[in-house]
Amino acid sequence: MTEPKVIMSLMFFTMAFAFYAATALFYIGYWLLRREWIGQTATIMAYIAALATTMVLIARAGESGHAPFSNLYESMILFVWAITIGYLWLEHRYKIKVIGAFVMTISFLAVLSASLLPYRFKSVEPLNPALQSKWKWLVGILEPMGLERYAIGWLDFHVFTTFIGYAAFAIAFGLSIMYLLKERFEARKKGNFLVDSFPETRILDELSYRGIALGFPFLSLGIISGAIWANYAWGTYWSWDPKETWSLITWFVYAAYLHARVTRGWRGKKSAYLSIAGFIAVVFLYWGVSFILPGLHAYA
Image 1 (cartoon, rainbow, N blue to C red):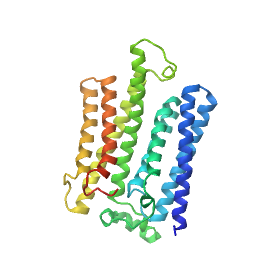
Image 2: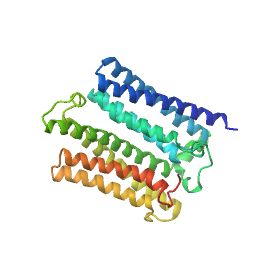
Image 3: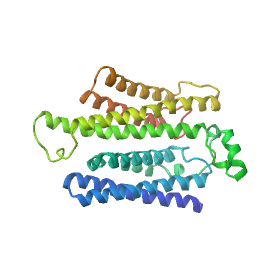
């Protein structure tokens, strides 16, 4: 029988799934129909979805006794949470709701992917010994309060920073798709109701760049902390495991983007295509490597 605590996290996940579906539909509806009340409803739904996702993570931590980042299902929830928080900040800062039609659809697709995973990913199981790397100094602080089981370690820091980077790249990916659609019609000097509501191409290009510039340091921290954790778990900082290799490939793609942007003055279509290529590398790094290429990181 499923434990009540596990049922609690799955209940919050079901709520999150429903609200992400509604959020994506309302943002798409706002994009197509241009009704202000639809946009306002979409934003409210996004906040509720973010809250439900937060509750999934909290409930999951309570059920397992460790940070909820240990398998494919949990890290997907973290990914969705980070995208949503990042998007809500973007909407609050720039007041451009139409971006939600693309970014929040990515969030919904990520939630959908998580929902389709086998139940074994969603059930709480003992943490793999290789993943147990709590910071001793933090355990010492929490132990007198009886909270040492909630201490985090290199694994948690590695996954958290990496997925903040992934989320920033996902937002940049959505913006790049919008840029290419907008640029295509502008080049033809033809209006189109589907892209007329988009921000100017220069704004989309700049926001995409800012997303990648934000995500790149987090990806770098994720790789560095992952190497430290690998040395702790397996006795070596780098073993050319498939996931390590693809992490490095992804890092080089985004490093090339930033280098071309800063030193070569790349703007527009070239940057958009490179942004899209980078996110495709992220998707393969996370899903393709997990299911296709066996290795030390094969916790899927």
